[in-house]
Image (cartoon, rainbow, N blue to C red; front, side, top):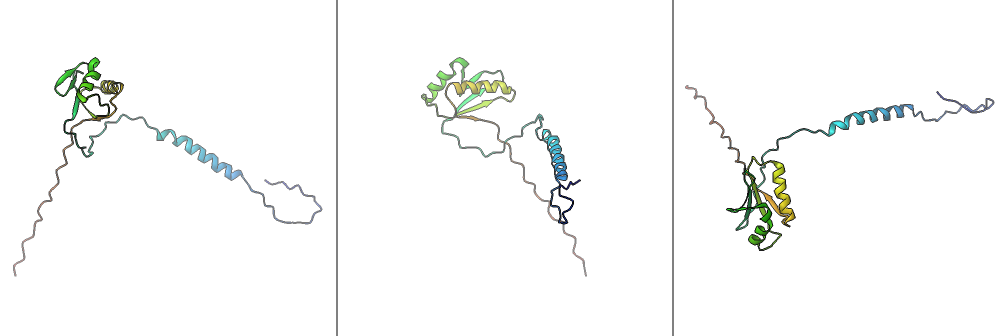
Length: 157
C-alpha cells in the first residue's frame, strides 16, 4: 500500500520509486527461523567408541622410558614398581632430571580414563610434559587376492 503526499494540482504523473520492504522482511524472518531450528541440531552429544589409531608409529629412542599403569592401578617404571608419591624422584633418577625427556605411558585397557588422567597429572606436576601414549598397533588389513579368472573352454572347430 502506497501513499502519495503530493499536491493534487500537480500534473506530474511520474513513476513512484519506493522500495517495498515487506517481502524482504518476510524472507529475513523465515531465514532466522530456519537458523534458530538448525543451530541446536549441529551440536550433538552422542557417546562414541573411538576407533583404533592407524597412525604411523614414531621412532623410539634407544632406551625409552616406559611408565605402566597396571589393571590394579599400580605404577611400574620399566620393570620396577613405583609408589605414586615417589614418582617424581624415580623419574628424576632415571632421566638425570632432564624434564624434556619423553615418557611413554602404557595402561591396561581396563584402567578407567579418570585414573589414567590422574597419572598424567602426576607427570605434569613432576615437570614431565612430553608424554606419549602407547597402544597396540592395529594389524594391517589383509590384502584381498582376486580369484583367478576362469576361462571358458575354447570352441573346437
